[in-house]
Length: 128
Image 1: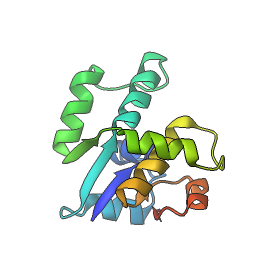
Image 2 (image 1 turned 60 degrees about the vertical axis):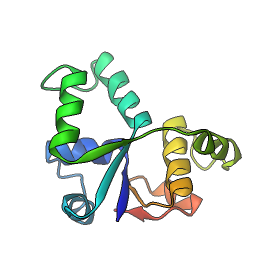
Image 3 (image 1 turned 90 degrees about the horizontal axis):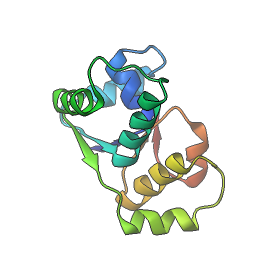
């Protein structure tokens, strides 16, 4: 199964954070599942580290690359189809990154691993 990881789910998984649900952790740990991280989430992580809201053990370029490789996570690029869908989504969610993740989940037909229950209003399959 392909999985799109919300930014917080990816970070909580890496940190062993107890806020990550048992079900989310199980599907993320299942080796046969394909774990995808949106480039938009990588951008959010970069912003949070530059603002000092997120501390990484190494510089972002090293840390993110190493963690993605160690956990077999692949970057999902943003396509024009994703962007076009964002423009058509209702405003259940105001966060632009979350709206993009929803659009990617819908367009790619893959579940979104997220604690954010608002994303379910878009009809995406949410795993939590």
